[in-house]
Length: 249
Image 1 (cartoon, rainbow, N blue to C red):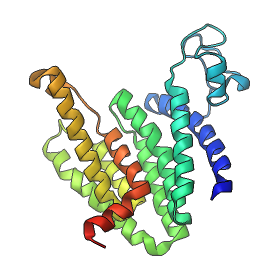
Image 2 (cartoon, helix red, strand yellow; image 1 turned 180 degrees about the horizontal axis):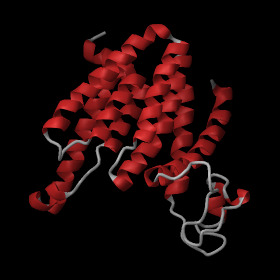
Image 3 (cartoon, rainbow, N blue to C red; image 1 turned 30 degrees about the vertical axis):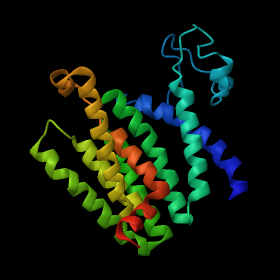
Image 4 (cartoon, helix red, strand yellow; image 1 turned 90 degrees about the horizontal axis):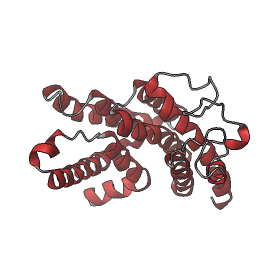
């Protein structure tokens, strides 16, 4: 797998740059194709040589060439994270199916987490295509794995659906749909992914309450999507091992 590291890293950087566009435009219901990337300050179109992942941000010192507007460090961070995740998937995937599912899942989870942090929403424009691609990949690459995908997806969705219907001020339907999507990608490994997400959510929620006090802490809306993404990413790499450990296999 070593020869694949460089292509995976390069492709991850390129995709990461595009995912920044996705995270910005999807919640605003803008086209992902047109217009070209522009400075949010002066509206000037970004030149190709100013749009090289990480390199351009460093050379420009995090500012627009035209107006000097600050460019958030989150852009190169997203590119680096996507690059690292792509390399990790390529290095650890046991077969073609898991490699393809892992890469596609990473591609969707990165903008989903960013959008949920910024806007407290998980757009159907991302979860819908993600679900379709998971099923298509399973059917094309390993049809025998498809029943596990569908069962895990349905089970994860139903696990969150009832609480969401009972307490509409708690978990949103975007989280419910994302859980179902994770089941399609992770199969049986969605169980530990959900457990990790719940534990992480409780830890962060407790920390917020401890910092701000019970009354003020309960008013803070902490999006759950990033926790689901965290659990899913851990289980992309170690999900089957965790399940086997739980089952004593």
